[in-house]
Image (tube, rainbow over all chains, first blue to last red; front, top):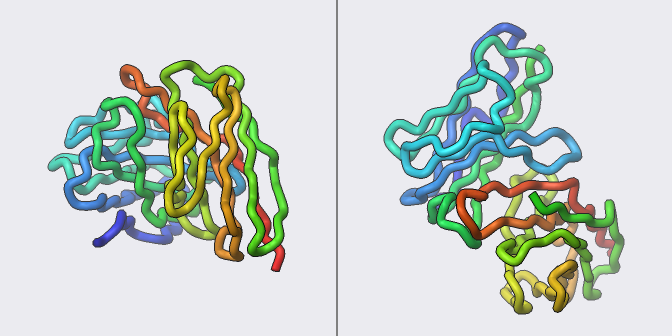
Length: 118
Length: 112
């Protein structure tokens, strides 16, 4: 079956512009996670959803970052007034179980969106 | 959050077993041990997880020390396709600690 997809795969934008990154999780997956990954580092948690509810946004760096998942499926991560330090790989993951279910819960990752802010 | 310690890199020969260590001396009784790997230019991929007992699946085996303060991911017969960064992560079973807290992982180099 189809895995997690993200679009666009690459985004180059100028400083000050807004960008919207899309994540299409595996069909039926309950939880959806956003991560940011710098080169040579592991992913850094940003936020996550159970269904359409944003459960935790404590990892979002500042108020220029926001995310939504209005129908409990596709999610959009929006960065307003982009800055050069926002350049990174943004990864989305989904899981069939709620994030608060405890225990294991394999996360399936998408290919990521490489954001470059000039 | 409990943290893990892994070697920065390891080398192994193709078709030989690989043992990737992970130390987690501050692990709590409710922490699961997860392993993910990330192949070059790809997203992370789940490998295996366990709580107390050793675990086997088609990809690897996970050996967990009796005191749970360390674990070892075992690739029984490494291939060139196993070259990746391997992450050992603790995830709490309790309450709302759903996050995967990632370290820098171990870069596994497979020599032909």
